[in-house]
Image (tube, rainbow, N blue to C red; front, top):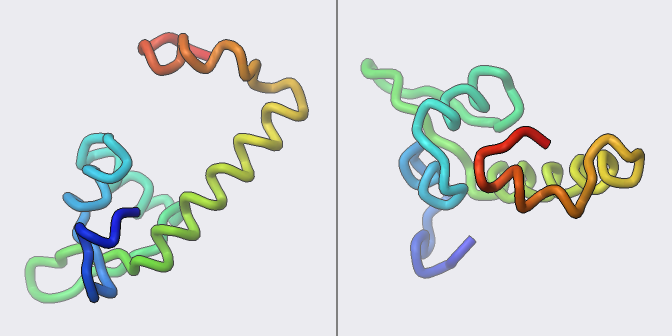
Length: 89
């Protein structure tokens, strides 16, 4: 994560996380609600905040899970380009 985007900030918004992951807001909300991404809600509007360390841990965990899936043969590393184009892996 770029330190330019979050200088001295301990927490990120769902918009910032979505931008970093290049996904939509619904995907980030789904990750939060499922517990895959750790965050908390605050205030009367229940705004989500994600700790920078929690976000970085999510990314590390995602890399590890992907590596395990590739090693087990569940995911073909060569087919990842097709996945980026919107095709099923």
